[in-house]
Image (cartoon, rainbow, N blue to C red; front, side):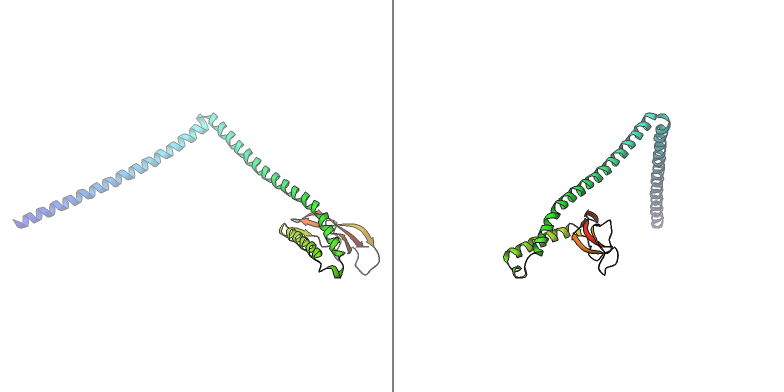
Length: 198
């Protein structure tokens, strides 16, 4: 009797395990079927939208085209505005530099006429300090003096105002830098005024 009871208990447990396994399989089958149905539904929906966009609704196509054109026009306008703003900034900076250059020239002339015994005077030291500040500001802003003396004449950088035929220098060599030229970010702000050997 005890053996029969145990056997019946084991059979019941086996049945329960089989039923649980069947339920799990059924749930997985339902989930898979649901996923497939949803994917098919999405595909059908997108196909329906495409069909309705391309065939049934020409007004929607026109609106989409108008939207894309407006978006492209806006993007072009934005790029053009940024470019114009940068050009205006460059133009403004160039005009300010051109206005500063005569002041720098005057500083250089004043310092070149200082006598040796006056170089330690407080006033001269103050003028030198201001001149050094201007030179540092030029360096920070990428404003550079054009090298001229001893260089070959370059019409893009130099303006020949005098020539000389005597001397040991090679032809087309700059023998004197009469007025410094400057560039701003690689673009010439003022050409150097030079004397050239012919």
